[in-house]
Image (cartoon, rainbow, N blue to C red; front, side, top):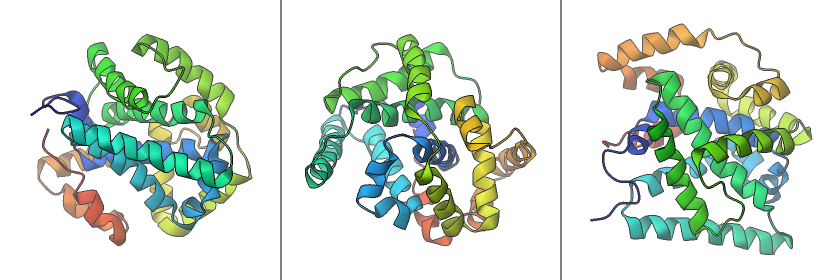
Length: 253
């Protein structure tokens, strides 16, 4: 059986651990709020009504692709493309090509950054694996202007961060929704996770600062993971309505 991402790949290792996926979620939630195309996510009303659920659905699609056999993964990618086509038809406009690329770039970047915060530094070849996985997703979707290599992606990533992000009324509103849906303590944890994984440009626009008191918490969490106490810790700090979904994110490579 041929899988979209081969067994043993570091990409499966990254996306097969709920804690890593949660950090990917944290980084993406920050950058989504700043993207100049965030109005598209407001168009259907789903994002402000349920920002956690909307972002989890994006992460869930990516995870499903990573762990599916090739044909199922391709069908999932085609489904994503069809959903966006329907939204474009409803609004009578086209989502910019750069906005599609931005989402792929987030998945590449936060996959790498989150794993390196929680686990270890990735080799250049492992980073290439991450890039290749999401490049193939974008290629299947028919996206234009994709970088052809990880090195080219690094250059384009910086360009996209500079050109396609800004703090807007959508940013302010979305962060209000994060706080409303998470509560004060979990919201503070979200911000700290963002400090640890977002690029400097995103940090500056959001004014997150550089106070990283979550670092010792991560060290404690790693110890809990060795003692098989991590599930109890996650259950204590995560919203109850998402705990079942989060637990399902743990998949052997």
